[in-house]
Length: 301
Image (cartoon, rainbow, N blue to C red; front, side):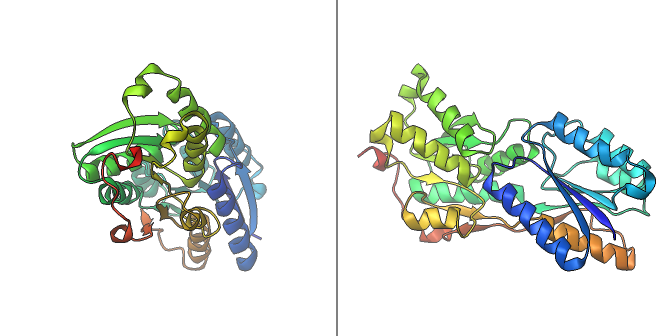
């Protein structure tokens, strides 16, 4: 039985749990052996997990490593060691320039990337902000870890959609509710926060949006009417929170682990080169045009 290893970020994060379960369900359906690892947000831990499989005896090595990197740096060396050992390398939600060289040097292996269109995620959130508060306003952005390429690309897409008329403040969490609550609470205790009352709080996932909301309600109850935006949009997560009025909107992104495993199963059958990059389009929930404009200052009423 062919084995696939899926390396994810943080077991405490809702979307990562969904990706893990998606991988298990698809692997079971396709009759593949699967190992899932969580790095708990630490790149060093994740690298150690991967090297254990790369350095395993040849008959115990997996067909491929499916990796959502815990950092934007440090993984090219891991990838090169993997392919040298005859193990495929599939990135999740992370583009990397070194993939081109790996694909050229090892056409016999499954190498590629599959993920949500992270730039479009940022653009959608930017369009949601413009629809809610207009073409200018103050935006508090609660992001993932600064070193994460997903964090960086989503923020670039956000800025692209907003233009230069919105004033931005950024805070970094760890993709978790607790991490975002700590980050926002720490910021609110600063003197500088008093002069920046946001018109909207845009978080890069729904868990962090909830954490931001908790911090705001505890420390600034008068800010409780500020609209909050998230991302992931799970039916029992972000979509439900929108329905309950806790979030103004979210962005629906699909799990990428199941499609990655399906690509590897197809490769086993035909040995055709994997796509260099396969992007799954995200969607606003609700649709951007259905959001009720609030305008700058309306949350301060």
